[in-house]
Image (tube, rainbow, N blue to C red):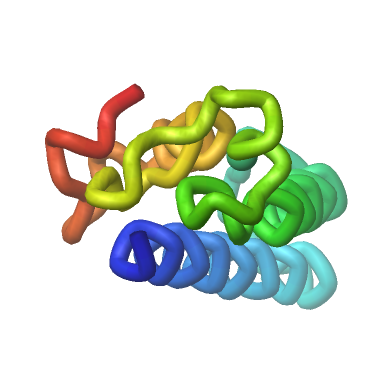
Amino acid sequence: MDRFAQFLRRQLDIDMELLRRAREDAETGTTHRCLITPIRGFRECELKTRLLAAHHRCGTGEGPCDELGESYPPEDERGCPTRALLGLPYADRPGYARRWRP
Ligand SMILES: [Zn+2]
């Protein structure tokens, strides 16, 4: 499970860095078209970070999804359906394992 969480945190770090660059480009007048505004991107990263933190213990027997009976078995790195869905936007990034698809 740690490997999946580490993968997700790394992707969020990459997104944050890309957004910082986009914001710098916007502030300096450099023109690179971005489909989402940096502000919205930062909000989405915050949302994903908070969800990942809230579901941090799922699959260990101590997470909210464990209490609801919705977590995955301990050998499943994803932990729970929420965590698995958080990984879906990064399915095309290096390091994403096919077995992590929700
Ligand atoms: Zn969960």
